Length: 490
RNA sequence: GGCGGCGUAGCCAAGUGGUAAGGCAAGGGUCUGCAAAACCCUAAUACCUCGGUUCGAUUCCGAGCGCCGCCUCCA
Image 1 (cartoon, rainbow, N blue to C red):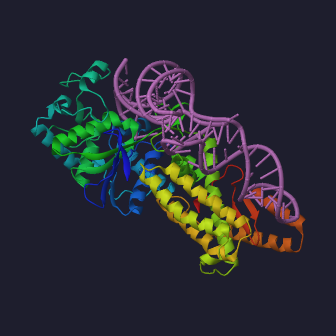
Image 2 (image 1 turned 90 degrees about the vertical axis):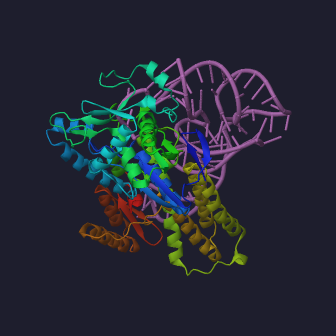
Image 3 (image 1 turned 30 degrees about the vertical axis):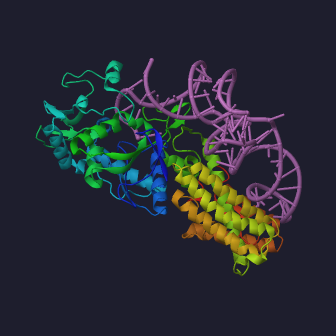
């Protein structure tokens, strides 16, 4: 398996420190607002990477931070006139809700900054003891120039940075490049006691401490958006390696950003859409497909049109699954007998075994999800072809095998795991809809089409779409207009 | 200015030293009481420009143009 390593700017063979085990860290949210659809990208793609590693037999331990003390949280609290802790609590909860809606698996360990303060203080003390940090009036800074490899990840040199001169001059720092490990408390801010006085941790520090205290001094994979490379990840390397004397991360992975109207989507630019709203509108699988149909290291442009296209693409697969289950229901399933297969059947058999292989080889190549999805869709076309041309009973097991393969390969992607059609819904509303459908079916049998059509139209106006298939009628909530993607959500 | 990335058909997007997956859209057909949907087929003479290496480059090298990111909080 190959991974592109930001540190070396090359694709490298992936060899975890400990055979069969992967220690992985993905930068988590600062909980001051709902995350936007661009923020969702690393969460989704690295969720897929994690699942794929598991699919390939690795035991993965994933850690992710929750930054629940920070300037932005404090600002939000001030502007809303509530406690910073309340802001953090509210958006931490929202974060987990949004993950769940997007079907992103939770990390194995999810530390909060505020619960890791003692380890942070200990970490800072170690840096001071080693001469890598200094205290000035209750602020503790990291001595960037003392760390000789500074700039390795981002390809910058300290002299370059100095001449860039965009670093604010701060009299308390020995050098403008130094960054804060511990910030002295200002009145009214959340703070904790420390050897340097009341204060709170700096942002870069949190990740290092949480990562190393959970996963050990050396991580296999550390992931996040490209905009974190500098200074955040650069600083993490410096302080971690200075403190532990060990290599901090073996493989750095960075996703490119989401663009909107020609620029990166970002909170500060104000050109964003909340992930929860997009998920609600297009369905979680459309969002996943949207991201996975591109390589994670290229920028993507967001548009509602692209989201709608993604939803259609996902639906194409579900329609096939639906059709296969319907075929399988209607006939007893014979065992696979290769001798009885038509030419088409034999071709399909070959396609099945080839698809898994090609899928894996794409995914093994720096997680080429776009190529892998292409393979899946080729299989979809072959299966459709097989169904649309006179289906032979001997080929039914092949369709079943195709369905299973789509579900198997979809699993690491977090796609195509849902029920193919709307299950009988619990609750009065679902049952009433089922009842109307049943009445309408009776009418159709009696050829009372006028009334049957009336029911369909009236339901449509209420946001319930019906589709007549061979023997049954499928329904969903408003996929026709702009409603949610029921099938993808099932 | 420094560092990094990108430029493939109408749109989106893989990939390859020997004329190039897939998705969406479009056109044609099949199916259906009707609707909607679905399925199949189809092409388009798709690889930013200019040089170079090569028997041969979209794929390698160089230059240029354009777009984007980082250099400040940011996924």
